[in-house]
Amino acid sequence: MITRSWFLVGLALLCLCVGGCVQLERFNPDFPATHEEILIDRQRMRDNPVGLERPVLVLSGYRSPSLVAGRLKRSILRHTGADTGEIATLAYVWSGSVEEPARRAVARVEDMFPSDDPRWTSEVDVVAVSMGGLVARLAASDPELRGEQGGKQLRIGTLYTLASPHRGAKLAEDIHLDSATRAMIPGSEFLEVLDETFQSREYEVVPYAVLNDSWVGATNAAPVGQEPIWTPGRSFLSHHMVSFDIRIQTDLLRRLRGEEPIGLPGAPPCD
Image (cartoon, rainbow, N blue to C red; front, side, top):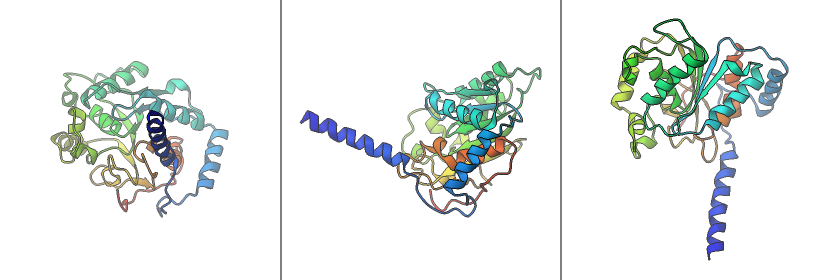
């Protein structure tokens, strides 16, 4: 009986893993590149390094391990030719708030790319997975909003967000165990304040979304007034696999290289 039970558990995990690797097919006229074209373009980028316009900060998602940010860093290095010291990463597995990671994000940039400006850090592009998008937006806002007096603000060139809950997370409506998850409830006071400060921002936001996202929802993955660049997602674990999405990665890499994008914003047909 024990052997059979473990077999069923293993089979269930295998199904989840396989499902997470199955890319769904749904044509997006705003993102028409085929899989073969994507692969060719990635090889072109590897063969033609150009570097980065400015340093990059890669932020993991809610309680996500550092390997997520680390994997994105390696992809950026490989496809841009950047030096490893030009890319900072940050994960916050044990943090139950948005404020604490935002403070750490500012400190991380200040440590790696020091600035003499008393108010702003050095300018960086930010690649943010899931909750990392809110962390970046908060870090770029008034330091008092993250519980600091007289701290610096994160100076962002362009913020690239991958399935970030800009308008809240679907799952947070039912499960909100800590400050961070409560902040991600659609319509929360935290999001309202963040949206108010967002109006005066000086940086661009490029939001990406995946369909079949049961955690955030594709329609929540762009700031108010914007539409995301969306891809079909996966059959299972679509939200968790967003950083592995080869289409999103390729469009992001082209933008970091200063090249024309291949994906354009558009209203997702569903979550």
